[in-house]
Length: 286
Image 1: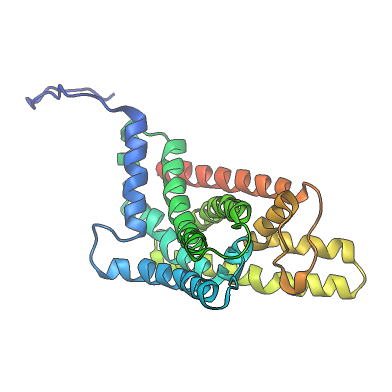
Image 2: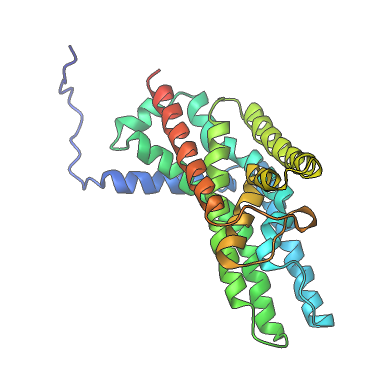
């Protein structure tokens, strides 16, 4: 039976900031870790180099609008076109959020404070979601501001920009949940990077093959569902069905109609969050 002894330490009489403060502090700490803030310079190279690559199309797009009065990559298709860079960012940084806590077995220390498993997982998902959303949303915003400054003929594409930002948030949440879930199965950062990038490459390569095979064999109605196996095309399908934006699948292949894409997105998010909670409940019990 455990007992509490007074060994003479001074009592703490300050304010108790509670679970909300602890969760926010954990989220901010994790977000700073994604971009290497407060760490050696080598920790900042990968995230900021990938962020610079993401901003390049915006610079080119603004130059095109200024010089030849034409837009570059459409707002609604930016995440799909730049999906390889986003996937590399996710693979490189998701293990940074979860691997150290598993490797150094500090989960019991976190959970000894007023932070539950759900709040711990929520803080990690929130930090990664904000990071991925910033990676996609900042170039979109720079392009939109450039369009306003250049003053293109006709009304600005405000609706398409706002829709693209909403879809960027959904995509960031979906990618973060599954990226962290995959990375959390190993305390080793290298294995986490490999697992996330392998799953992305498999989905990117297999979806067009499955679609083409089914379509060429006459199963057009079944072929359209293949696109939902990739998070980027899944969110693009949601965007197309909800907002009426153009499709950005390969060769403008069709997506499933109605609310099917939204239902798949919700189910995947629920399954990913449940997997994360179960994984950390098991890790904390060790």
